[in-house]
Image (cartoon, rainbow, N blue to C red):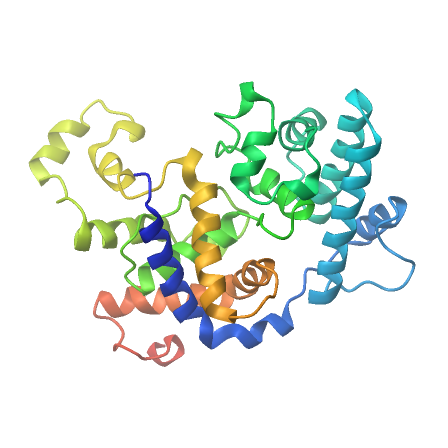
Amino acid sequence: MKPTTSQAVAFGHEMATYLSAYRHRLDDYNWGMTESCIAAARARGLRSDRDFGGDFAETLELRQAVAQRSREIQAGKKGATRVQELADLAKFVISDWGGLNGNDEETIEEYASRFTDIETGFDAVVDHESLRLAVRPRIRRGLYRFGGIASWSKWLSFVWNDWALIYDARIAFALDAIHFIRSVNAPVLPVPPGRNGLLASLDDESAAAFAWLGSYGSACPARDELVAASVGKTSKDDPLRVWLNTAVVPGQNAYAYYLEVMAAAHRQLWQDDRPLVHTEMLLFKISIAEIAQDFIAEMLARFGQLPEGAALAEAA
């Protein structure tokens, strides 16, 4: 289902309402960097020799340093040299900083070429639509395809940290958990593969899809229909999965929808001129502890195993 702007705004409103109790947790943000990552940053002139702990301010400084370097490359280099230097910077963001080591050099170079080998000055790219218009016409249609989104969104968020945000498993989990907790009347976001065991065991994408379809969507296929239709079918063609997928935003629309939801939440949550990335970093910070625990508690409450409003620890 392709979402509407009003649905994105409604989702953002419920997000902001939920997150308002956790705004103070942003002060505790920390993205630990390995020694090899710190060495890679210094080798590229992105960090000074002083100690680096990866706290909130230092992470913002690193993002800004990458943004500045990318602009220097884009303005000063041409052709294959520009792509190679942007790819080296993207490798630092995706692999060294982000810890996503499953991408080979060709894949990272493809991300650098697809999104940032453009003639338009980077400062003139102010949102996802202006980036789409800036890239080569032949790649516009599939520009934001879902495959690799946890990797390529990191690259975009460092180059354009005023509007582009990271979309990975932790962020998507947080959004769908809030969707479920707040009973949002809007489509659900697809969750890419992740590395966190706790989040992998909590299928909040399906939970949110069930909840939304049950309240606002079409009726679930009848049991006899499910049994008869599933014979000889792959999981992709399973009628229950097909039904659930009607609640989930198509992959090619997911990033634009995500940015729209986040922008709506950000405006309500902070009501000042701080960068949009603050809301992304807050979501990341509380995704495993607070949001996951609130999601589990809400699931138990709906199953009748936890009194409404009770803390999860009280159920033990």
